[in-house]
Image 1 (cartoon, rainbow, N blue to C red):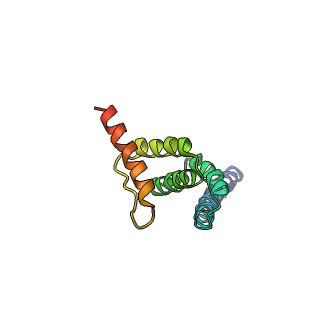
Image 2 (spheres, rainbow, N blue to C red; image 1 turned 180 degrees about the vertical axis):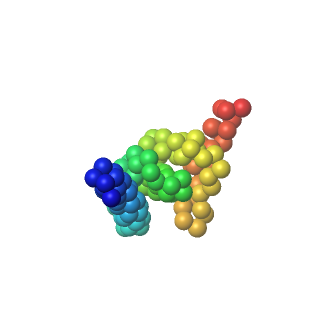
Image 3 (cartoon, one colour; image 1 turned 90 degrees about the horizontal axis):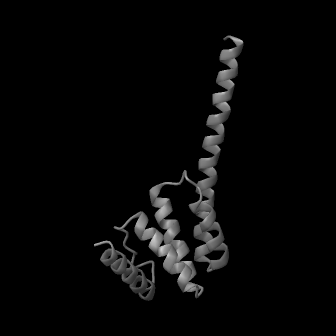
Length: 124
């Protein structure tokens, strides 16, 4: 292998390794988010959710779940205006999102559905 081919190979190997490691890191962050949320550590959940949402490499499903966890955490910690903003961002990201009645309290589902209805009426 020529020197410049070897250098190119090493460069792409390093780039690929960094990409793979960042995928594992985002998986660990999402798992950590879920643990914080289930432990009712809402302030830490919100901070980590903001960090995850800033990551452009997360999947659509992870982004949706992160929005939901963040919005529920904000609502549960009496940050209603922030929850409204987060849920609106979620609805604009995916208008077909439905909150799971087994996972989310009816009060939060009503709040979310009212926002969804208002956004739908405004877009007509």
